[in-house]
Image 1 (tube, helix red, strand yellow):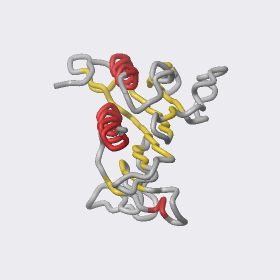
Image 2 (cartoon, helix red, strand yellow):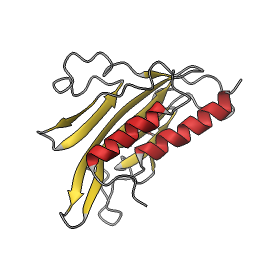
Image 3 (cartoon, one colour):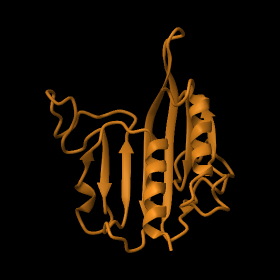
Image 4 (cartoon, helix red, strand yellow):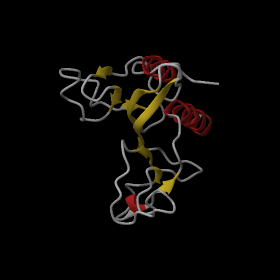
Length: 181
């Protein structure tokens, strides 16, 4: 089953997913700044980051993270583009970052999480040709409690590409079931 037939539809599905997130303050659920960037050939969806200011001029929501209802913040940046051929079009989530910060005390001991998939994987220090990736900095990875202590950001657990809509939905389920009053 395909989640979207084109990049615009994927962007719309992501906006709709956030609109249903019970973990996000209801006043903020409906706003996810997004635009098509001609230069990059991709839809850019972002909230809580200062990047892409040239695309999102005068949009105050871009740099404001989502506030979570039981404490914490969610920041999101997703780049989606068309790939494949005319006969077999496909949607490529070219890059994403989902950061969850300032979580209240919980049974899992999570303070913060960050999922990253960069636009392209540089072959710098640590590159392994047999793995086709860099164990020191995997292309798509998860950080756990990355702001907790010095060096905590170096823990990068490879996850492979993950659908941001699935990440948000899974987090929303965990958050709401964990912090439910």
